[in-house]
Image (tube, rainbow, N blue to C red; front, side):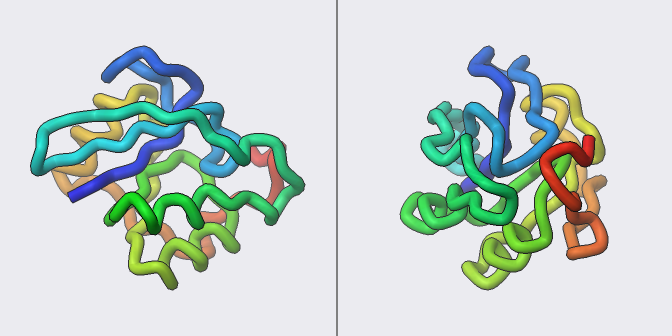
Length: 122
């Protein structure tokens, strides 16, 4: 399974989870089968609200799940249409914490009720 987590920084498993999916500077791609984590910059970090496009790139990577602290309704809907499940990371502080909470099945699957209303929602 491949899991994407939006991050503020690239500091390994101690990387801080970003407050918002689309404007995160980096993404971690955790592959549970290969037991590996790769980091990549967010090429569409600067965008108007509702216009983020990281989801388009994720489909090429075979992503199954997104874990995030904040995400817009449009991004949730787009990811779900692509077959990618979105879970709220419940304000996880680090990549390690978010992945642990997911593996322990304690995270809530996102719906539009969990969506941010704009970039200043956190």
